[in-house]
Every structure is written in C-alpha cells, then in structure tokens.
Image (tube, rainbow over all chains, first blue to last red; front, side, top):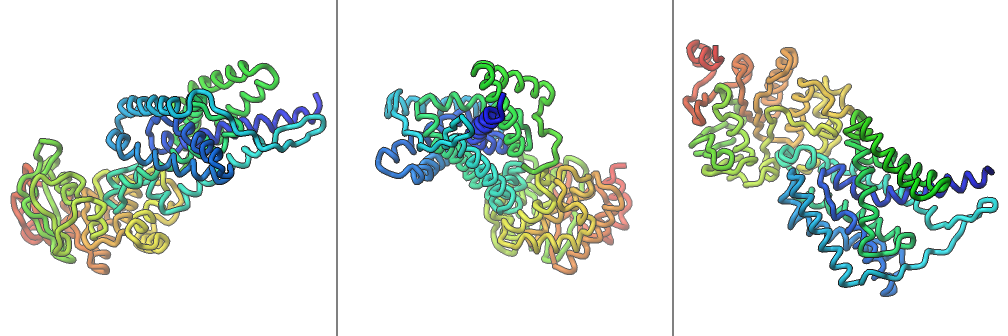
Length: 288
Length: 232
C-alpha cells in the first residue's frame, strides 16, 4: 500500500469525522450542556439546509446563505423554546415526546412545501491532487470548518460573560436567578444557539448532503450517540468521540464496505458505553 | 434596611411560613434561630423570591422588592443558600465573576476583592467549584454572594458541614464585611455560638412563625432558651 493512498484515506476519514462533528456540535450544546433531549435536532439541520437552498435559489451567494440559515433556525429555535421546551425542563420523557412531535411537524411541513425530492446545489469544484489520487476540496474544507466551529463554541461558552451566565443557568437555575441572572431568558438564547448551530451544519453541508425532508434522521442518531459517549465534558468529549468514531468508521469503510464502517461505529459505541456508562469524560476535570 | 412583612408562603398548596414579619436595620446583623424544620430556609427562599409569595411583602432599602429573584439580586439582595449550590462545572473564579458581571460589575475586580477577604481561595481559583471541599464551597458561595455588592446578605446555615477552623474564619470575615462595607445580614443558624459571635439581635422561629425577638445579651443570659434551641 503506498503512502499517497494512506494519506488520501486519512484525509477523507478526517473529513467524515469533521462532518459528523459539524452535525453534532449543536446537539452538544442542547443535549450535552442543557440536558434537553431534542429529538427535533435533525429537523433543525434540515431547516438550515432548506433555508440555505431557498436563499441560493433566490440568487443569494452560498456564503451569505449560511448566515441566513443560522438566523432562521435560531429564530425557530427560540420560538420552540419559549412555547414548548421552557415548560418541560427536567421532564425528560415529556421533552422527548414533545420534540418528537415537533420533528414530525417539521418533516411534514418540509414535504408539503418542498416535496420529497429537491435539487442539490453543485459542490464548489476544486480538487486536491495527492499522487495519483484526487480528492474533492469541499469535504476537506469541512475539517477547518469543524475546527472553527468547535473553537467558536468553546470560546463563546468559556470566555464570554454570556457563556458564564449560560453555564450557571444550566447548572444551578435557581442560584443563577438569585445572583441576578435572568436564567429563563439565557436558557432561551442557549437553546436558540444550539438550533442555530444545527442550522449552520445543514447549510454548510448542503453541497455534500442535499436537502431532503428526512435528512435530519440520518444525522441525528450518530450525533446523539456521539454526545452520549462524550459525557459531561460535552464539547471536548464530542470532538474526540467524533474523530475516534467517525474517523474510525470511515477508515473501516474505505478498506472494507460502508456497512462495515457503520458496524464499527455502533460496536465501538456500545463498547465505550459499556466501559464508561456515564461517557468517556465522566471523570475529566474540565469545564467544557 | 430590609423588611419582611406578613410573609405567608410554602410549596404548592402546603403553607410552611405563616404571617412572618421581621426587620433588619441597615448595617445590622440579625440571627434567625430555631430548630430543624421550623421554616427558616423557606423564609429565606421567600425573601429571595425563589418561592412565590402567597401573602406579604419584602422591602429592600425602603422600596418594595420586585417579584423576580434576579431583579431582587440587582436591588442588592445577596443570598448564600443552605447546601451552598455553587456552579459545579465552573471554576471558583467563574463562580465569583459571573455574579459580579450579572450585576454590571467588573468580574476581575470582584475576584481580586474576594481573594483579599478569602485568601484560602487563592490556590483554588482555577479549580472546578464542584471539586472543592465543603468548607471551601461555603466560602465560595459567600464570595459569590458578595460579588453582587449586596446591601443585605441572607445566609442560610453557613456553618453546616464546615470544619471549625473555617467556621471561625467565616465569622471573622462576616464581621469585617459588616463593619467595612456596612452590609446588613440575616443569618439562619443552628450554631448558637456562631450567631452570638456575630449577631446583635435574634428572632426565634417555631412552627413557621416568629415566636419571639431577643437581643444578644438576653440570649446569652437565657440558658433555658439556649438549651431549647440547641435541642439538647
């Protein structure tokens, strides 16, 4: 096996891991940090994808369509939080049921508005040549996007006043209020940011994963498993888990078959949860 | 100054405190005594607004306190809850800074000031609060409450589960803060010695109501009452 092939496999695996991470980070905020099991998370991804698609069809350049998708999903996320999630904090099963309902509504709305088949937007054409092999540039770009996204959330949550308020409101809601934090408003914003991150993912991945009403479903299972395996130190844990599970699955897939890749993913997930029932980061002394 | 008038409150339909009135003058330190389960913590939570008032009012500095706990904090009401409730996955520094910033004060300055009062936190500022010892967490909860620059401080069982050396340190700091910054305090306690060392006046609670009001000198003389409060 030559070195060029190996480099190609490693790069494309890293890019698959990054795509998983991009789809997961919003859930790391909403589920990992806030503890809200949002079964509609995948649908926020889908809304992000359709928002970006619609914007580009209306002539907006793709780069500008992404912030539009973020704004749309943040707004819908805030609305869902205020109308539904806010009343259900701490009631896990009620939250699951409610968000499952929301996901069905969003899915059906997408079917009604856009139909089940939609045209993709072509992938920006740029290829990278490694020896005899050629890799598409856009998926490789996702490695950088995932890194920036992770850093953005890390700095937002640990280095800003909002981030401190957000974590305080989640960890001890009553004490957060007692020291002057409007924790209900802060929680709305945090949930909305989580949804915005999902919308960003749907938009930025649009050239790779075309918008379909059911696209959220394919992401949400692996994203949830990633956050569960990550455990309480949700961001760092999710990054490592996405690289390990997503990258490992992709390497397995490139040497065997894509089914073998999925089997790898789920077997390792099961093994990790058996070894670390509370997630791999249960004993880490880190903030995020 | 701080005043609770005719407070009635509890959880859901269960009324725990009934028609309680008390007053803490500006710069005054007042103890709230009584055995377990008489409603001291409920009264504290009523005062912060964390449980809704069924009846009664709270006044901070002569003005009616707003209903929301967050707005009460910004009106100068500091709260150190029983059980500390520090933010466990935030550093000690962040616990203090977030309280200051949420009230429009500089977080860095608040941390520096806190460390002059509580030098024992210095080696721990970058540790997660959840990993600190009980005494350290208590001191941190106190530092967090002070970071909002309160005019009135509510302390709920600040000595519970805290080692004696730290109890003395807390008493010393509370006295110092009271003198230097004129912060009034209402301290719910079971530790009588601690209360006698810092409070000038005391209310004694029983079955969700104030049974009597007394001053330090009387309390020091009244061995029968002391026995009763200590529960021996």
